[in-house]
Length: 398
Image (cartoon, rainbow, N blue to C red; front, side, top):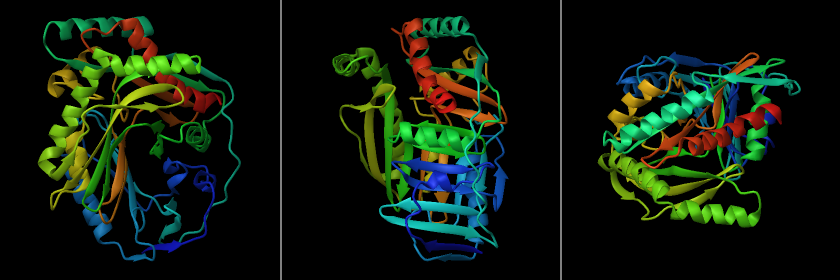
């Protein structure tokens, strides 16, 4: 039995979360915060995992007895999901939480499944001293991998590859995911702050928003760190817009999204030139894409068609993925994979899991990456990855 009722504005949604294993999807204070598990599925790895997930959701949500007094995207039963970057890697998961607070467009709601009571909210806990260690590759090893990728690109094997690296985190005390979410949502309100099955972050990249037939996507590729002063910041943004390397990288990403969406859409609008998306730590080239789905296409069909985009994989995709497996020295797990939510009507929002980490107990693993092109400079790509790590380092250290 699923019941959704309208409620008065609950204030900070994240402040409603009890400590254990929260689920969240927040942007500009709107979205959803949830906990508990009414249903959970470990999605089997493989090329058909999104179809398996769609069928599982259809079975579980289709059998629910739903009393929804609000009837807006995100009401009724909602499943949060995280899919691994590599289809052959285990770890993809879908969870239908038992209790959910939501707010959007001036409306707020509470969804409960079965006989449930609200848990006591304990104070946020600081993790204490934070220490970092190398992940799969040290910084010099990773810059060497970048140099090897540049050689392969210049040899004509591919146009672009995205290489990621990881950092290990050792905290003095167990890491409170709610504290990370609170810091991320306040510092990066333009991003989608998320939590799903231990994967926590604030991604600037919307893979797809699905409302009825309408879909939206935000393509990000091409990055520069923020400047030390307003004048430096403006100059850096202008340099990014004028950069042939970054414009070409962005064009590859836009083309991959266009090619993925066109067969699923009866209408598709793609901008001719990118705009700047300015975040507290970096600036991105950004292109908002919108369209209308053909009849019968679900949001998970869209996610399956789009992942991995050139923004997180490369061009051509198959060649880039082979090179990633060869050079990165790690399993990305959920990093750069789809993360988001879907309701029983098929509405939902899915982002690419960037600026994130996998958290458990007093340990965490952080991820960051950079798009490698023929004229990439390994030291500059390392600096870009380090700038992206700062998002989660801020969340951990405050």
